[in-house]
Length: 296
Image (cartoon, rainbow, N blue to C red; front, side, top):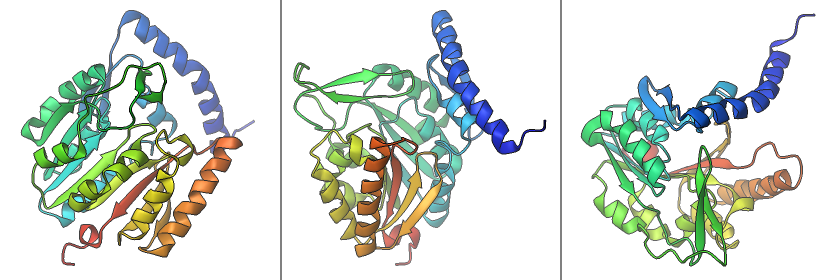
């Protein structure tokens, strides 16, 4: 019997769920790092990191943004990306290989991930810089946990209070001056909270906001979701929505349409979380008119 392409992909995906953890445990046991290529540039990944597996399974995963940023770089003389929650620098490498007029400031609080980011970004010289620290504050008592691929904060009454935070204001003040600045965040659970708490500082400097939109999983004030939607709807920005695998779903023009789309997607994500989870979060891009057309 000849299987269709769709059935073969489905069977390969099922096999991957079983095989990948075994391979990861073997790499961890012998301490073997992974050597990978992003945008034609070599990178080194920790033994437990799952990026190669995810991208074999879903080729658009964590890869589509390179084309988006390259298009912005063609429109502006110089572009700076503030990569908050940089992990091992994989997204930064994709940005830096997208165009030669892009600089990246990678911000990562996990010392192990930050060390890998420094190694991976050294090849780009003064176009890349790594800042070690967590951006906040994101709450008065939190604890950080790392998995093989990512890490994040979890609320805990027993956790030691975190008192040292990098502020968005300090990061923006130290970022290279550019014709266009992109705020990118992937800080598992606190993207919405940080944007809302530091809205004026971030939006006054950054013509592009690119962040993980996960209302069901937000670890800040639940009301932050409504505050963020209102801020985006009244900001005059157009919002592009991508699913967690990098496939574009919607484009919402400035104004009330942003509220309608994001309120509907918030309810949809809640349904996903309570039912059969297929899309756990979304990527949002919010562009000012100047970002898309420098002549405006």
